[in-house]
Image 1 (cartoon, rainbow, N blue to C red):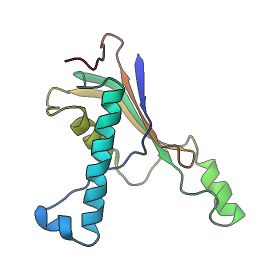
Image 2: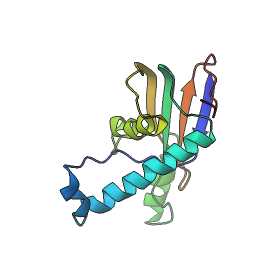
Image 3: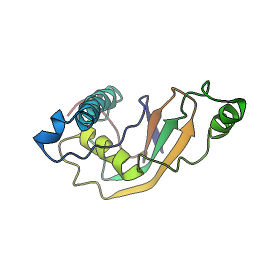
Length: 144
């Protein structure tokens, strides 16, 4: 298996209800942030040699950074640090995390029919990343 690590803090897809929501005081900021995230993700994927994803993905693992561990009481700090390596069981939902990866990898993702395993794991503060695991038989290249 071949693992491709993308050093970016995962962000879930944002649902919009048309152009009107772009100018909404809170939704507009989230949508603009998501569009920037998707562009950054596409760039980082191309740098790693991913111009299109294969039909099957072995796994996608999202490493979600813990909130600032220096904020709160000693008990809260210890609780935050104890999360590292544990399952991330809160928003964003993993289905919303997958959408920008598929969109960033190419114009059409209809050929992808399987992703063996999807995980969200807590990681250290500020160390968000995404690891895409592919079968070895797929060779990634920047060339078309």
